[in-house]
Image (tube, rainbow, N blue to C red):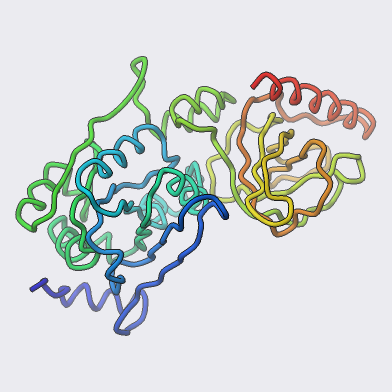
Length: 347
């Protein structure tokens, strides 16, 4: 019989999420609408349906879902014949422990789900990281979350994986616990190229330096900013360059400036992929100081408000600039568009 949750854990769960027989919340949707099978997103480790148990999972934060992360997922896939899952934590533990630190995430939860679905993940366990999980010892986490809660059959982690209160457990600890508690463990070696480890930190550095192609080599895909198209001040439309405006709140900012981009419209009547040019920044011409992403799609005519876009940064074209007049700004926008078209034609 599975061991019961400890009394302290029960109390903490009630304090954090309210009492009740089941706190499980399931989102069943296509993470990238209309493309491929459903991804089942579970928001707790209790009350899971039977179809979500017995999975082989990769576990980690998976910020960016880079080539090293994909190696861990591939290890989970190859380990046993079982549905493929991923365990991650939301919010990112770093956000929980240092809430006032500058934004560092490469992707939001929506973008991560989209990327994982493309890799064939069937179940995404987005575990709520807060006082409960942060306070569990490595053994309590393995027993109460992995075994009693999720009922996993196998787990793969990276060689540098740590878990449990105070990061007391590592990959070897997890392997020992798996032997005792009845689940398999694969430890994936760290990957790199040219002496550089594939890591979220190295990718952030490349993006901060305006090197999206270098970031792509480590990611295994273009760095994307994803989210809903928001209403802006519609200045671009008046200048002959209508833009789709997107928030970058909570994300690590690539180097501010103008980029050649490819934007995927993920749903609605305009669903598809469009080349374009985008400005990531604070719009110094108009005295705005909150960064956002403004995307102009080439040869596009339509309303995208409320739709979700996935914008791939292909090449950095130039830094932000302040112009003496609107005519000078429009002339530069013309040059930016021509430069972006040339880059994307060769892409």
